[in-house]
Length: 437
Image 1 (cartoon, rainbow, N blue to C red):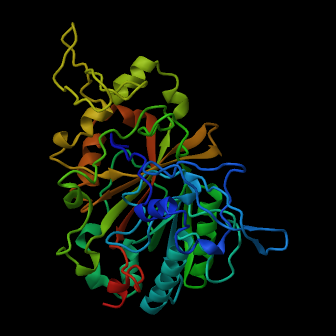
Image 2 (image 1 turned 90 degrees about the vertical axis):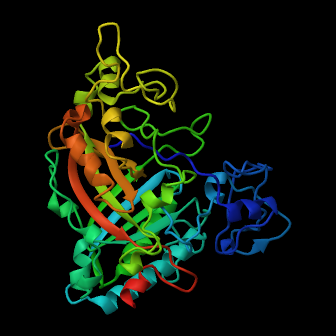
Image 3 (image 1 turned 180 degrees about the horizontal axis):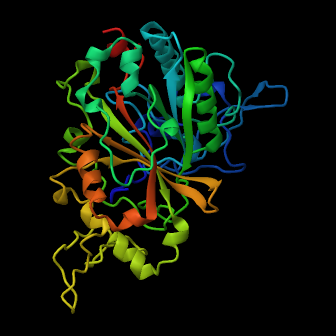
């Protein structure tokens, strides 16, 4: 885990404008978007006005009744766009529910089958993100819901290129990650030919998308592994704030922000980059990081803060100030000791301590019950984005490997690296420039 974070994003502009006009965004007619009974208007996300969507309601026979309107809460109304310069699910705010799933191409499946699969997946993702039903055999799990900020993101693993005869198009940046001393990796839950990230602010919407993607795989690919995660629900706090992890720490204060001048340079492959099919894409590093919570919770709050380098209450650096105050790495106490310990996690992960290396973190927490050792099987589904993992994740993780105080309380149990191409244009499917180029 690095000392960076993503904060809740504003509502999608198109969705907000549609709400302000009293109209549902295009594609909403497939589902009856039900809101809170009796509500006359609810705030539409962080950007919105006091308005709801006016939609027809259905009686028990399924026929529409006119003249009635119900308000759709901001959680259901928020909609991300499938088509664009970048794929969705990278710069959007943290979502309440998430599924990460990797697939391996089936025996005998090659480039042709992969192209057909990505075409199906892209069509399904576009429909579901707009609040519509899947084209074939929709399960109706999310029939009553809006888009709920659903995003579906697709990536290619190292093995995909050999399976499809596209080795010459495999990016150098996709070379396997080096081994780290903190790794206890389960190969069965690592890597994979194809990777899909699903996120939404409603659990049923996220599950609905997961089932649709799994069904679309058909005979072309089989699930290699699946992991399920969560974050705090939108609106659960009095005001938008940096997320807390399962250790109780505010986690992610120094995440790069799209408003920063070098954000695109750090996170996305340039339009002129190589290979050409990765233009405007990014590389995702995925790590299942188990937190040894029983051990962590035996520490005093002061000791926990020294491990992290920040206050548990508000995320402020131990050197003083508020959450966003610059950390004073040279400040010492009355005994001459560094206020922020030399091996504190927040100190080690700073870009200025790693040659400027930075990643965009967009994780989910997980809790999978009790492990065979009787301890909580819980922690972080770490997902980070960068233009080049050899200049982003790798140098930071190497530094952590050499003396991060937090390493005693975490265990890296699985790992994956995926090339995530740029967004699909209207009429395209994700990866088309690779598979048909």
